[in-house]
Image (cartoon, rainbow, N blue to C red; front, side):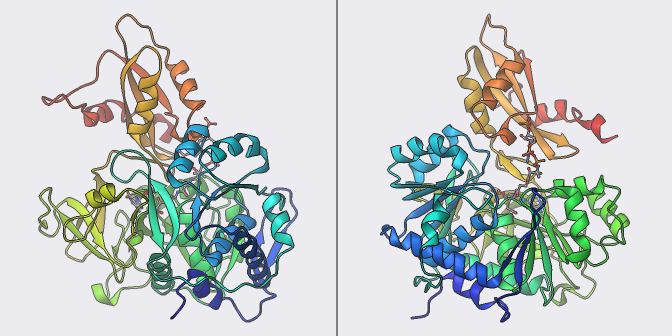
Length: 521
Ligand code: MLC
Ligand code: AMP
């Protein structure tokens, strides 16, 4: 039987010159560190052998909350090779958030930073995790120590396309975080298709400056480079100056809109500096038309915007070249997310599930080999998010025009996307509502010049209580990942409600929409 382990497809694309550089790091310490294709193969084999040596049950989850490093990527590859399930966690998550994930996913292994070991170990052990290992961003930690003695070759464990490769936590359209199960088949089909669709070719070099705990940095970017045998210039953190400086040695860049906004603020971003680049790709959040146009003017490049989700990886994309399917005039259009990708079916329906006429707004639903297997241990939630005829409800609202361009106009899910990170108002509100003296609260997203959108809290006090908004923010900050902390908090007399008693967030959004407007001038 064919082995569909994703690692095999990635490994097959490695160039024959295994001693060539595969990953070039730009260390903050100033010491460059390079990894050859041979290094990627041998070191991920050692880690895979080490994981296999732990005698874990089949389907074990390997939870990972570490700073970005090449070794962290190797751990992902090793997990694929060993046939386990990779579970990446945002480094900003604090104890309460981690507690929820480990109790829900019950990982057999938790890899954390050396600095977080004492904090994470009891949380992980409480959830039954047998192995808590460490990985620093400076090639240290017990994971590497234990892997070092293992053989540098390994045969990837046999997998079928439907076997789960990774779980990514997301809140989907409602409620608590759910683990989206992505299979080897989901990931491979998307990677192979994007290699072709985005015109990857020999000699391409990717600047990788995104975090590697979400779809964008972990799957879209890493898979694209590996499955094309392309070198990566690896940056542990996004620094606009460093990315611009690397452009003459690179050809492809992927980023969330905030990264483009920040690069545009740099005088070193010029047409000449970007002339070696072949492709700039944006996604994870709406790219403002102003950013799209300004980028075109400054660099001569047209950003290619695409749209995806944790549950589906990539769904739509503007064309790389004129797309024959859609007429030779098709080009990258700002303000749209392009066409449904090959193999992806996308439809726009009304609230009753009936397709809306071309050009009209409705709910976006999708099908395809990229659509996830379901939410981890939540069959009911999974059922809710699919239609009876098998379409996944994205929670995004949009339209398709006569030339098949998809435009996202909003979201039916109560979600704020801030700098490419998702913030779920229901989660933040539940924390605020627990604070002493708080009667209720509402978190809304308002436009922001840097992050695109940020959370603002409106809080109502219990009768007779004087609330202090700074104290509310400080209390939230001590419990939740920093990007979830509202950028402002207002204490109000009451929340606007409709006749059904539902809080009218649209009214609040309207009231506060200019809060950060002055910063754009
Ligand atoms: C950082 N901060 C944020 C924030 N990032 N606030 C709101 N939203 C964000 N995204 C705040 C911190 O809380 C902190 O505030 C201060 O900024 C500095 O933190 P930092 O970590 O030093 O920030 P910085 O390095 O500047 O990070 C900004 C960023 C980062 C834009 C580089 O957010 C980022 O890498 N975003 C990319 C997210 C991403 O990869 N998304 C893909 C999802 S996949 P304080 O007050 O605590 O000091 C997906 C599917 C798809 O959506 O289609 O791709
Ligand atoms: P996540 O749950 O982090 O995977 O976030 C996925 C969500 O990001 C999608 O459902 C969209 O709402 C949003 N998104 C991704 N790409 C785009 C884009 N190009 N434009 C607008 N929204 C996007």
